[in-house]
Amino acid sequence: MINLIDDDDIARALRSDVRTGLTASPKSLPPKWFYDARGSELFEEITRLPEYYPTRTERAVLTEAAPAIARITEAKTLVELGSGSSEKTRLLLDAMLGRGTLGSFVPLDVSSSFLAESVARLQADYPGLTVTGVAGDFARHLGHLPDGDNRVIAFLGGTIGNLAPAERAAFLASVRQTLHPGEWLLLGADLVKDPAVLVPAYDDAAGVTAAFNRNVLQVVNRELGADFDPAAFAHVALWDPDREWIEMRLRAGAAQRVRIPALDLTVEFAAGEEMRTEISAKFRRAGLRDELGVAGFELSHWWTDPREWFGVMLAQA
Ligand code: AVJ
Image (cartoon, rainbow, N blue to C red; front, side, top):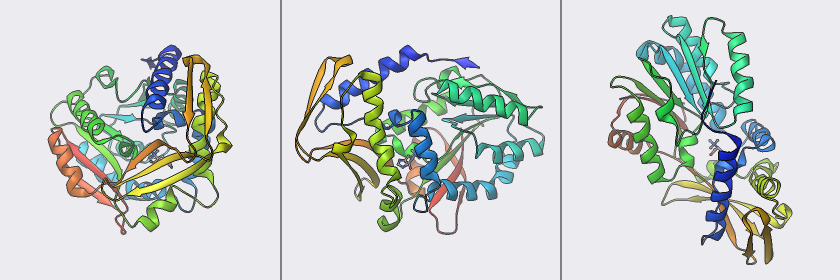
């Protein structure tokens, strides 16, 4: 394991993000704070909802594409950013080990305890593979990844959609910087589709996404001693047709005041005021090709499902 962040860094980043977001107008909180233990469980639950198509669609695309990805890249090292449970990664590991090229797997995740568990499981299941977990932040620590040749950096799940356009450009450029010419980026991106499909995926009938959204308030309560009443906020999911992204918000049902002792901050919400908690951008093939080009990649291969709901692409540095 390589540890690039400790609990102090995380606590400092949370304080800074909450202060910045809650003193801005309109208010916002970054989506990375959704994923404490409870939030990660809720996200797992979301991936099994009938309305939430991205996870199962990406899995189907990867199942089809994995042998080709292994053949085209001849990867010696697979790096996975924001690896989580590395479940879909096993499709890639199996295909790359099957080709006989792969020697090491490098999962990078912010949650070091979660990562340690998943590294232990992978090491047990793949005895011939060198697994090096990196506890780090994909927006800051790409420069510290182990060097190698014929590396594939995988960024799956559609998490790229959480980045605002400028952050996305910076992220893609930093991935490109990390790679040697000829190495690869494997990107999973959710695609633009009918809002009648998109909106329910972020506002499910069982209310799991609403609970996931409100959970960020519990995180701020627990970590910063705040007194948010999650029940006083309604879950909002809306499609922005101009920017082509889903936006999740929390709407204050009534005027209220929230104390955040760790920041020595009091925040006022007006009745009906909405705070943004996530953007989840949806993409088109040509747009992604151009963004990858600007970052110094060439789009090499593109796979999708029959409905063209989710894209998996291979780009070469
Ligand atoms: C994990 C960022 C891909 O944007 O679809 C799921 C998170 N938010 N439901 C997404 C999420 C609401 C998810 N990503």
